[in-house]
Amino acid sequence: MPETIMLPLTHIAAIAVEKAYRKGEHHIPVLRGVDIEVRRGEFVSIVGQSGSGKSTLLHLLGLLDGPDVGEVKLYGHRIDDLPARSRDELRNRVFGFIFQFYHLLPELSVLENVLAPLMIRHSTWQYWKNRGAFGDQAKDMLQKVGLGHRLTHKPSELSGGEMQRAAIARALMGNPEVLLADEPTGNLDADTGREIMDLLTSLNGQNELTIIMVTHDEAIAKCAHRIVRLAEGRLEAWGAAA
Ligand code: ADP
Ligand code: MG
Image (cartoon, rainbow, N blue to C red; front, side):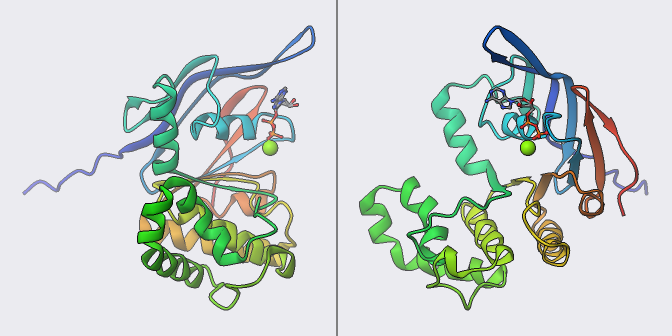
């Protein structure tokens, strides 16, 4: 009997993507024809010098911005040219984002920060009706990222690593398929950075969560299955991941 061949399934892809910014009179090309294909459940690191366009590429993949030229595809279907409402809907449903500076709301507790995306996504009535289930879901998620004991703390009462854990819990609340992480350890010391990477690696392994992470830290990049490097507006395979 022939073995079943599992074809690698491309989850998210950028094809021949170009992006430039305008600064006064100047036209600054940032991405000059970037191709990337990421398989379902894959963990990819994108490295490159500061200013090389890593964040720009991540924003295009997550529909936070659109390319000038080229396409972004989800499971082979073009998504960057959809109407704004469909893009908003896809962004909320498919992608989770985490950033270097966490972007937690300072006035809200950890639990409220994690619930905030659900408050925004649902009508007041829907949210109120489901508040018990949503609260349980948020507490479970905080437990999972190791913050079960910090529910009522404000962000200012947390360490950097704890703030990033809260941001990860918040990003996971909508059950995203793809986690886009922009320098998630950029503001953390090496040990705490490694703990956050352990958490991301475990989420990737448990849930087939596709992760695309931008970092300028080579040691951190090696936690991924594969590393690509952005240089002079193009992507190249780079080094070997662990
Ligand atoms: P990286 O994340 O690799 O540091 P970025 O994608 O943030 O790089 O930026 C790439 C280049 O594009 C930089 O030169 C930056 O100044 C420029 N840039 C980024 N965003 C904008 C913007 N909104 N307007 C103008 N220039 C921008
Ligand atoms: Mg950046």
